[in-house]
View (spheres, rainbow, N blue to C red):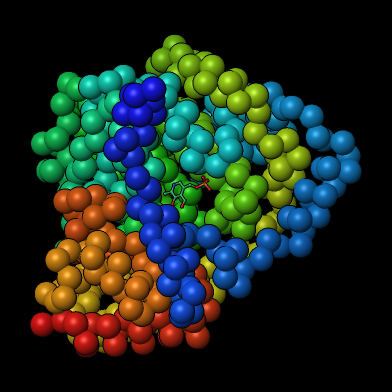
Length: 401
Ligand SMILES: Cc1ncc(COP(=O)(O)O)c(C=O)c1O
């Protein structure tokens, strides 16, 4: 057996930066306490799934909602999702919705359904790494459009315009953004929609953080885009504190009814392979979506305090600077100083090994627009963030210059 040809070529270039250093962190843990700031999972810290959401799941199980569901998702949940999106001025019906096992599966399903080798996908630079990996996996070329740090990480419209071509299959927008925490202005979104309309390219709009916003409001892209096809992605993991349930959804809105149906059916074909998403969770979340979701206010309030703390500390540390995140729970500081590291990857690795602080290197989110940065979550309680920031400060004092 030839080992080189035994394994799938598709996975050769794929690497998910957020979890890449996990084995190293486990080693470091043998000698010191590691502060994990790499994964966007609120449940790894002091956030818990609200009791009423847990109860809804138990109820669904007790009510025998334990069968395989339809591949597009149960009608009750698709109805609740359509209602939610309608309230956001996105006019869709339950028949435009597909329930997925997290947005992660949604991304794979959309890319699997629409991309052919050689296609180009425009991604924000920097971007959530799964978009980069999924593009590579399906043989497409990912091209990042600049998001400008000097403009609060807003997409640079001229750069986007210059990079759209005949080969562009999809434009991806992540708003509020991971990893920068940027909230896109409505006028910027409108310009993106105009470019998409001009080139007749569908937009994939990932809005998983749409209700985790500290200043301003998210504009759902599909609410301002009557003349382009929008494939919306959203989910429950973060807002409803159910990361482990693996629940998300896709919706399609298009001025071209036939195209919309074709996209829907193609994605559904893919989703049929995996039979269905987790059925009890679907019934539980249908109930939750229709309820008051009282926990959200407290969640956002807590996160805002943590954001403010981390931002202030970063601003005070020599050698770091950051844009204040307006949404999500990530901050993307710039490493302003030269030091005992050759690049941001080595910076993060050394920080982990020496200080036990686990952040994700910026070039893992884009080699061009992410370099010389790192991403950290501000999910932990302030005491833990204080410990992490003290260690980062010490590291920079020791090694920079
Ligand atoms: C922008 C973005 N999209 C999608 C996901 C995947 O979320 P899930 O698969 O839990 O819905 C994440 C998770 O961090 C994310 O930040």
